[in-house]
Length: 77
Ligand SMILES: [Zn+2]
Image (cartoon, rainbow, N blue to C red):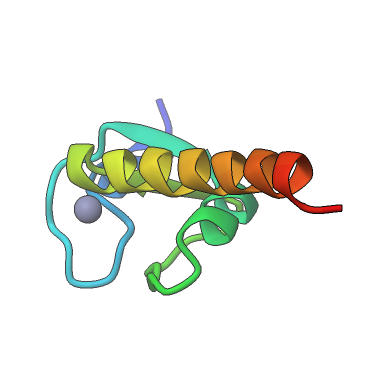
C-alpha cells in the first residue's frame, strides 16, 4: 500500500566510495571499518553493502589480521 520499500532498494550497490558494483553482502559498518579502515563508505548508517571484490578484500583483510595476531601470540613473548 504505502511504498516505503522503494528507497531501501537503492542500497543494492556497493557502499564503498566510487564503487558502483552490485552489492553481494551487507555487513555491520563497524566490522568493515575495522577490516578496511582506508576505504570510504557513502551514505550508510549501520550496515554497509559490499560488492564481490570489496567483500573479498574485507575477508582478506580480516583474515590476515587474525593470522598476524596468532603469529604475534606464538612468536612474541
Ligand atoms: Zn565495491
